[in-house]
Image (cartoon, rainbow, N blue to C red; front, side, top):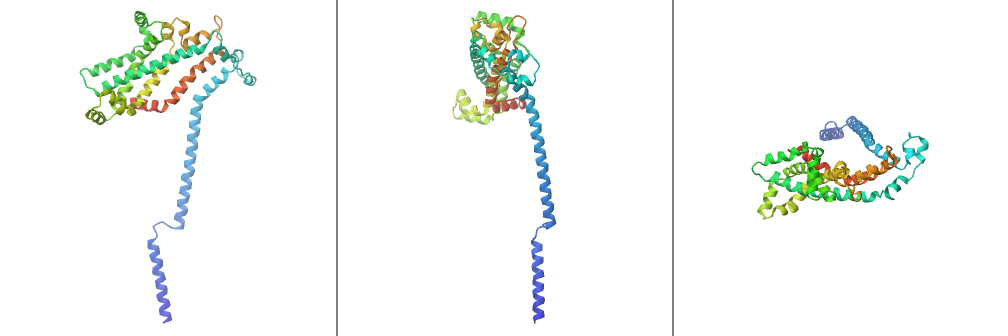
Length: 322
């Protein structure tokens, strides 16, 4: 009996082992786990190496843009006699605020010119955004006779540089008594920024689902109410793109401001810098030029950083929709 019992127990243990082996998932062995761990370790190493390459490439690309700006800011703190010479180890200790003091005080009070440029650029950005939004809404969501021809005429202005019509514009502003006026200059900038703004805003409105507009009409919402309450969050990237483009164009434009302004108190920053950077006839004060360029760069960087996420989304929408 003892022999029979021992054989039954051995048979039961063998069946239990077979049952556990049958429940074990295929490939789940010590060797399989080791291979899996090695594969995960290899993927982790490859992922870490790829991340390192991405960081190195991003750092190199960023340096291409950041290093020249940092070098310009650094050289703006050096006197003109040092700026005009080749850089060396001794020049890194010659740092001074003399260039900025000269620009921000005395007869060349550049703060007034900065304010003039801000007034013109902000006014042009607001007017361009408002008119372009209304025009884009009409071209995208309304169907009327010859709408394609009208939009084509708007795009035709892309090919007409304002330098080609500078004399007629001068005569027109003179007739409207807007010469030597910041308002006239802002209207001039608005006119030449509208084609880009209308193009971007039309593409932004084309991405809006028509069901939202139809639902707003059924609820009795007017066009201004639909724009402000329903469509505003959706078209905000396009509006920011239009405003940023108009601001940067107005902030950096030189020839129009030089042609339409004759009063020193109304000069914008580019015109003022062209005057203060020249000390005597035929010589250029590069120290003042670098300091003025840094001052002119600050508002552009602030506005761009503030609207960057909207600006990129607006450019993508303009590239994908026609």
